[in-house]
Length: 167
Image (tube, rainbow, N blue to C red; front, side):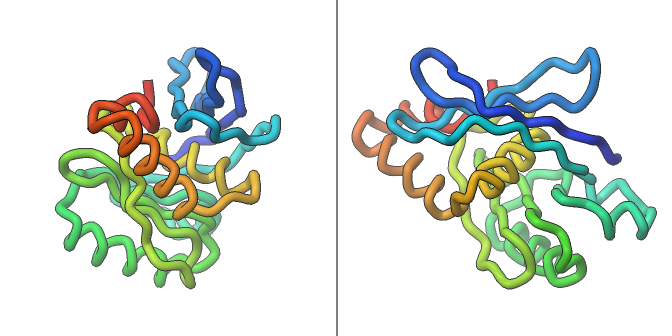
């Protein structure tokens, strides 16, 4: 499956959010950022491809974001993600959803995978596109993961569900 995704930085309930859409008539999804985390106004369009479903090498080679469909335990996700980034070094971001919530994501072939915590959500497939926009804004994945964890520590464990979740 391939799609052109548009992500825009948008305000949401006094916080910053990334609003992702993958075509006309699709329901937008939000990644609400932790309190006091802001990004400059920007719109990011990119090609997102499900590496488990797409068999067209040309499309896979052009993908800005590669995602893997099924939720995996951390060890299996790590193996899948490192293999994917090694095979597609031109891809900006690759991500695998984790059992229990969150994503394991890596920027390019040279970067170490990072767990980005978020609540388990059914509409996770646009979350990697939001992470691509975070990178496009000049930020790093580890920075977002640390901000989410810090916010959860300050506000309690339930805060994770409200700090980095697609709604």
